[in-house]
Length: 112
Image (cartoon, rainbow, N blue to C red; front, side):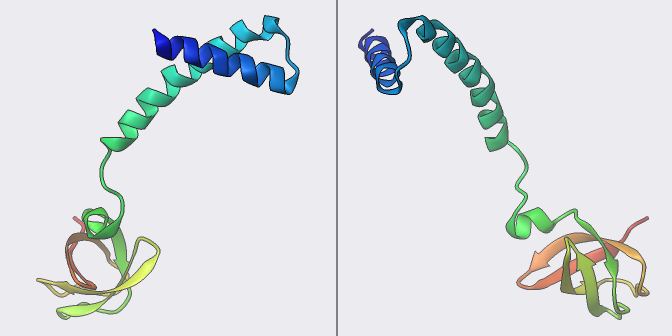
């Protein structure tokens, strides 16, 4: 109960600081409630999302072969040029998908 009283006192002090009347308290509280009803679920959803950075974020990304993979070569994935290897020969211009990342080398496979 003390937290609510403290929050109301803080709101009152902010209203006095900015020269707002007491009739603006209820709309401000309503806006805060709406904000937290939207912000909390969005924040929690963002925390449980798929990793999109680092090596884990590269797996499953698609790109294009720049130089023939025999078995090594270069690919363009995620707006970057990478060294890559493949279990099969892949000609330049063919779409590939990242299977794994080992250091700065991507293991890719041809997209079917």
